[in-house]
Length: 166
Image (cartoon, rainbow, N blue to C red; front, side):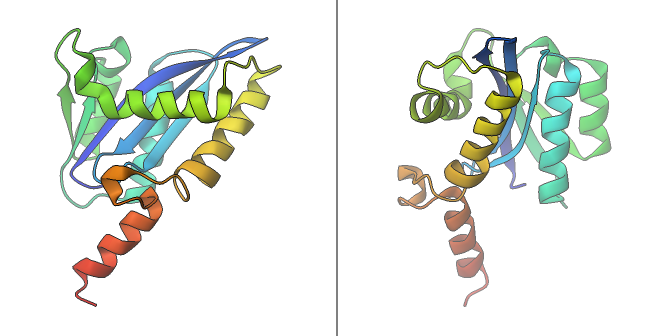
């Protein structure tokens, strides 16, 4: 992970009930570096997404994790996980949606470009479709103005190349 990431939760409608999606987004590249989907919005939903991000990035330096003030981000388990992995908590101001604008933008893209007001038959159908969107479209192909019209993965590759002086 780079120095700043953020995490948030959204919900997806299925005929079996809600499917909750937690994401961890790298603020530098806009890459979704961790995600988790579950039928309940509890602590392990966000911890699983953060664990994936830590596993993928293996941070060597302190990383700031921005979140809102939801109960999933204020509990002892969350704080213990952050301390254990050298992560620093940063919370948005109460009621200020602009503090989490990058996550809200990602959720809006997901819902506009993939979900499009549909109700999935099952949570598994929703999981499969969201997985496909994140891993096979958004991260490797979705172009971002902030990234010079490169996808998050291509932007990261370009930055590694530039930083090596090659």
